[in-house]
Image 1 (cartoon, rainbow, N blue to C red):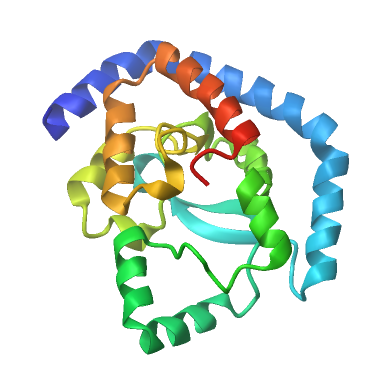
Image 2: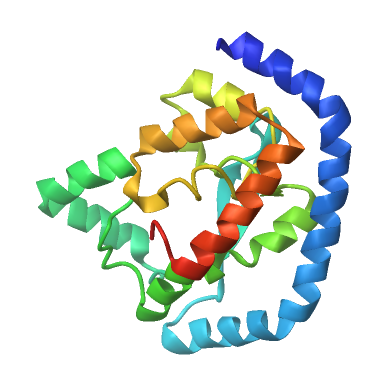
Length: 217
């Protein structure tokens, strides 16, 4: 399917489904944030106690219409993570190849002990519920990519920008960390092509299973 066809199909779906999806996002995010507040505060305190630095990590990500927004997560890395990454990649060709292929490292020494647990359980992404409330994200959608990740893929960027990024999505329930970066792009484009309530409900149910079993982590 061509990019024009993807955008045309999405435009037709958007007029009917997007308003309903937005109402569901707000209701679900607020309903989750209120009872989860004690857990959020506990995790924030634990992050601050383990290593120096803020509890929350803000990073520019691509949103709908290719606009960037500050995506929120609990900080799972040391505060000097970027400097550590540059040093490691310069010293190890194998790690450099892995990072170029997956845009992440399987055994990343930048991640703290608590951070590994938060990532394994997806608890690090709970602050993104606030991104859903503010309208920058949806509960379900494509992965919120960093701008430089999509620069070499203009066609994929245009297709993915048709909808809001999500906390969970087709990629997250289709192998997650076992997939390559190109696989993730493919899953996200496929999500846009099949943009519908039915697909979102299937992804939501599969997300529950993935979180409970830590499948694909």
